[in-house]
Amino acid sequence: MSLPPVHDPALDVLVPHWLSSADRQEVERAIRSALDGAPVHPVAAVHLAEVLTELHVAAAREVVWPAPAARVRRATGWGADVVPVRLSAVELASVLSLPGLGPLAREALAGGRSA
Image 1: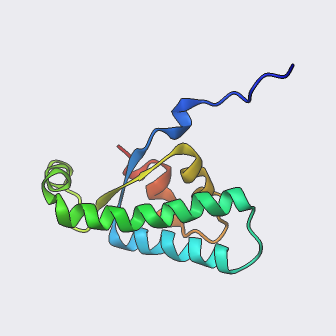
Image 2 (image 1 turned 120 degrees about the horizontal axis):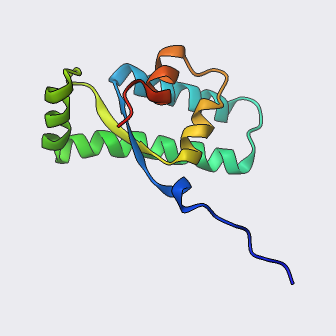
């Protein structure tokens, strides 16, 4: 009898990464470039597609509920275009593994503006 695979629930926790408009555009560009270019592992492709979805959800969340992010921006001094993009550890690792991701977006995701 074999044991079922062990799953770490901490990998599913969504952590907000506060990204500017330029950061979000760079993440989207890098993901689309990776998905349109060389073959991507199917599991990684799913995670990258989920990140694309979250980029759009983050923009919609800002329109529907602007007050929470506005309070954080006021407290931190971040620009008006900075919004939280919620990513799991696996999604974040998938994006950070992209060789075409620009250094500024990589820095923002790797801890520059993480909550």
